[in-house]
Length: 379
Image (tube, rainbow, N blue to C red; front, side, top):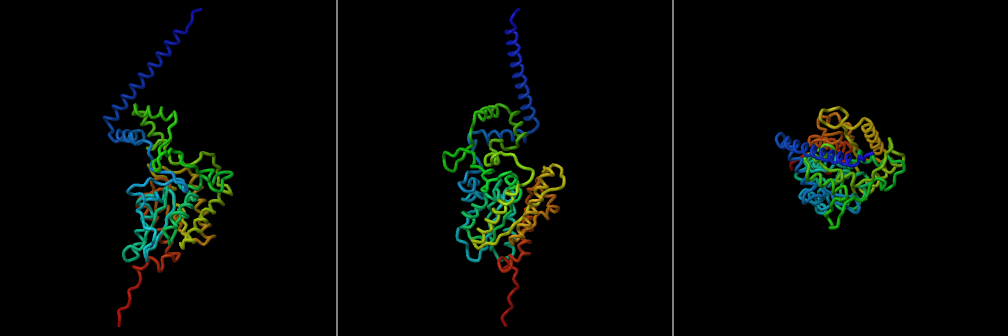
């Protein structure tokens, strides 16, 4: 019986060549189509390739922090501590009211509710009498805020500390046996930092293959954009800073207790600094809107329960409370996804916090200088 080895080898070679030719034709056709029909998509592909695989690739918008996990890289909009906003002097000017605002991605940003609250509160006085420091950081939980409050915010002598954590804590809370310091969830930022202040993404063998494919194929880059968005999976902030684990369907009793303890710790640090604690909950999109990503019903239910938990904690500990969930209907046109809002939405959230502070009597004789009744003329 004759050996069929050579025939099989020829088939394999033919199949391989045919596959390579097909991919080349497909790549050429895709690149030609994009070049002729969509300058926007072509630009997105090139931006992605340059940002994450060019000469300055692997640099990150965040840097590891020894106590808070991570903060932003300093630039024109980021202060020396790694947060949005300008650097303020440690010593508070006489007559100035300072507010420290804590939260995750729903708090950070140059036009987020801390900035809008600062604008609103300064309308109550003659000139500038309020400085709101934004200590929001995307992905942060209440556990990350505790050292930031102790080591950074308290140094600036805040008069109010506003806490806007709800959604991000739901993941570490839904663990069967959580660590009291959240180390079951949070890990040191998984990056290389041979030079202080210059963290770079780690490269494994498959990252080299990925980089080669990105360099030669627009179609491959498009597939990555479509599948993972504008940030590659290896640079995803959650992946770099959190351990992967299976979560329970509901927060564990210990997880709930640790969350409360985190908030109590922030409140105690605020009180030690002479500041008043203001707690908030989180508005959310519950209606379907075309083109707006919405969370699954089970997640919205978890967030609703977390909001109620925050209401009860505020009552239990005597904290001022801004019930932002009640603004959800008003915010519906302004949601960009299930919990993030546009600038107009941020203004509404700021108004809700201001109204809650006013209702609690926190603004009387502090920032209401501009609303005081005019003095009677001398007789």
